[in-house]
Length: 161
Image (cartoon, rainbow, N blue to C red):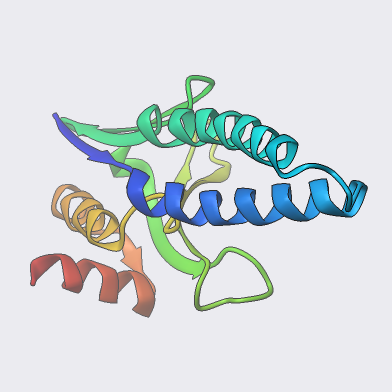
């Protein structure tokens, strides 16, 4: 079984900066005369709360390949098991309409048992690009019929370097 894990360092850094900024502005905007000690206590409490969420998001989220099966786990709650031979396409696309080059996601399209096309989304902000490149390469080795767009092809090629 090959396991593809998340990048907790990058995710924690991004969310920590956002959490600190939000907490400081929230506490000082609410009451500008608030003592610094209370601001620090509130900041630590907020950081612990957000940090716990990030820990769950990064440690308990992964993708794995076992035989001809791709398993995707997001936190404990969302689990998908996909037959790799049912995967039709892998696209690397912008996650949001703003900051398209910074926030990208890998979409794995597959056909379910009813013939409907479904997808899973692997965010590049959570999974490192090299990890997703190796995942694409391994999926393509098992199912060469998978179509790749130019960005996912580039990801796969970067995993070879």
